[in-house]
Image (cartoon, rainbow, N blue to C red; front, side, top):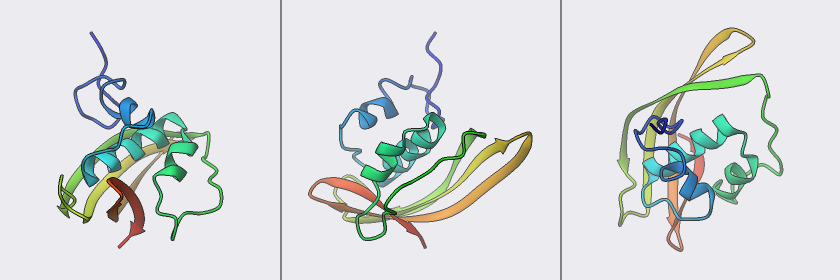
Length: 123
């Protein structure tokens, strides 16, 4: 049996977030959010930078190797659908770092340009 994707959806990584990490465009803001969470969980900084809007993208990104991303909760969102140009996704990303539990709660803004969603930042 294939383990579910780190983003929490039941499909395995290759057919879930893995396809976006390999270059397929995420069709919705929520799926981009899920794929970005999985990129944090797998240490894929290149994907995180690639899917960050150029107006807000940092010049580089260093991930803490001691972070273990354990669970993603999608709390809601607005817009961000198949035909949308803007959207938001509210989420909680759970992690541990050296045995200490932490939760990142964010309402994120996304835009779609040239058929590709990108992360703008927190609202």
